[in-house]
Length: 216
Image 1 (cartoon, rainbow, N blue to C red):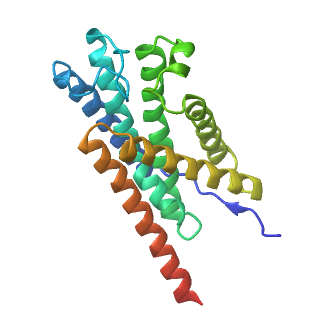
Image 2 (image 1 turned 120 degrees about the vertical axis):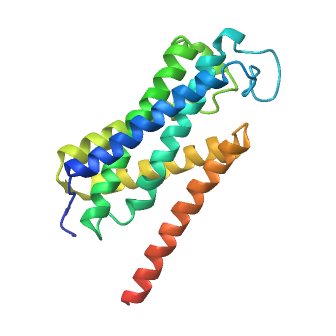
């Protein structure tokens, strides 16, 4: 049986870079939502048409919800790209955890804005609107992500069960962010972000495969 792998924690500089990036992206998200709140950037109708499920007065919060998930996506790109390198380089491991944590904080802002502000914490509405494609899975993912970050910061060794659930939550993160942006995004910018995530993760996996092949 393999010995548990030690997970290094981010140093102050690394964490500061990630948190400053998160703060800047959140600021841009809220500023961008405010500047575009008078434009019909996103439809008030759910996907597939039908009656509008958002009021015109909710457009600002609708834009904040979309812009904050874009901010979380930008932060999750380096986290997912560095994930496979965390056992090969302490620096990569520190940046992975720093950006994985910062992305979670921004995602929680998005989750709060979507659930509490936009939908008024009305879970019957959330569960039955076509605007939210997988509300139960999204909620499980949010809780799972919090648990994984907590484990990464409190358990210095990555036991087999920790590693297994960590791969699971990272795979789910990739699928949900990619599908939400590249496949379900209303705007070209959203689809571009989703495909950029896929390209970055694919390149990181290719780099890992090349390095493993060279070591043989």
